[in-house]
Image (cartoon, rainbow, N blue to C red; front, side):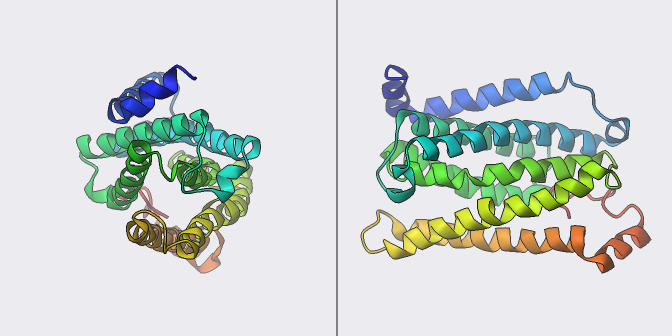
Length: 258
């Protein structure tokens, strides 16, 4: 790691591209795994399944990695502006590579219009993470931001189960509760902590205005999605509406559906 870190810091852009290519290799390898028959019946659902599979790998990897960094180096939580370790810097590099790969996959496969919310989120994350990699500032903040990936594991599983038509299974029912339990601390809690930190230290932070605006945009996005998540999984009137419409979700070309 002591040998690798100077290379990463000297060439953050190429390092991100290498990580992006590695996630593309993962994408290829995951295509060899079996896919539910119902998913294969729709070209869009098959692409969405593959995309979510790579996202699941990223979430499992980076969510665990981010938590480990904070447990081993607690200063990550308190010194968001300037503290980082070789492993935390590498984590941000790896994660940025994933977001570049995922944005490219969405755009190049022609699904940009239906996935504009994802692309907006990815653009904000990529810009903030690249700023951290090039300036070596806010790396700890990027690590904390990756706490959301703990919740992304259950979010991705939820979407994959819906694609497979498994909403009536016990796995889906259990996952929807775990999803909410992880959404509140790891997604809402993380976003609001970072927002509080920026506001509390705004007077001396580098480019504090940009990061505050970015956080506010993402805060609005996650609150809207939280409402949509509750509406879809817990509001009984919504469930009745979906049943009456029959294939409402299955016909949608929108990536970020309820």
